[in-house]
View 1 (cartoon, rainbow, N blue to C red):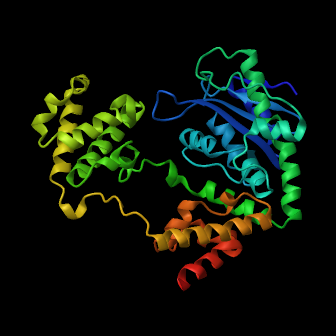
View 2: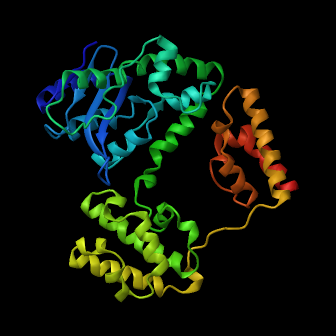
View 3: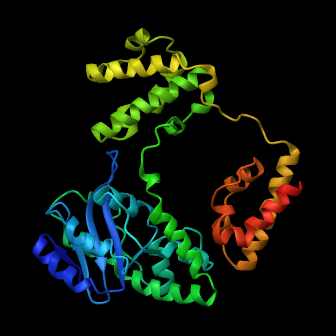
Length: 366
């Protein structure tokens, strides 16, 4: 099928009228975010058994028509490794499409390589090598070339056949509810696309070298950086590098010192400089009881032994199920369990039935 580029609302309406009764639609997006805080949507691809359309959201406002498809609960949207697509669609629509079927998650539940890429999956299943030459293209630049449209169309071309194969295989293994549960969690968790102001200091590479009130200053400066990055739609490091955040946190003892620490500060507006100075002062005045805490304690030999034991149980169960152990849980999940956490995906749903109940019993008995 040759993909069709849609650049006006009338043509989109005609196709939406045709697609509205389809039970399945393959979905993909192309976007650009290398220099921006938010991902900027450049193209939306939709495939049905008979059509592939590429909608240009820069040419017209496609939201109203696409809502008929994306938020129609009678249509399952099939995507591959959908986290970034869901983020850019959330930015575009203000909500998440549902229901979805993620072929990467399905593949992992069927014993394929964990987090297998779409191109590799297509190569393995259909002996087709997809052209990836446009992977790093700027999807906001116009006009779009014929090669770009062809590339974008291929990104949805094989999703419906993969769905058919994986859906049947999951049903045979009684794992269709596993997939449904994980995909529903993806659709229902809009919070992950909201700025995490309280913990954005943990994005500062090297924060581990700070201590005490320095961590409070780091948190305040990181929050200032996050807010300015959102306002100006620039990456965090375009606003201020991690090294400079660390330098301020480690050496500035009052807001008056800020002017002498780095010439970089002078490029900010007077309002931004004032807000930065206030952020530093807020950090310096934070009571010790509210400083961020870093767990620097190394695990004891007994804790290491317990972790290895739990990892062994997970590995054995994964081998029995013929899936990668990371599908069941990560090392971090096990560490949290040993630290006393009694929440998270390991202790809910199908994972709890498969392995979580056993792991919890082992920890409680130790």
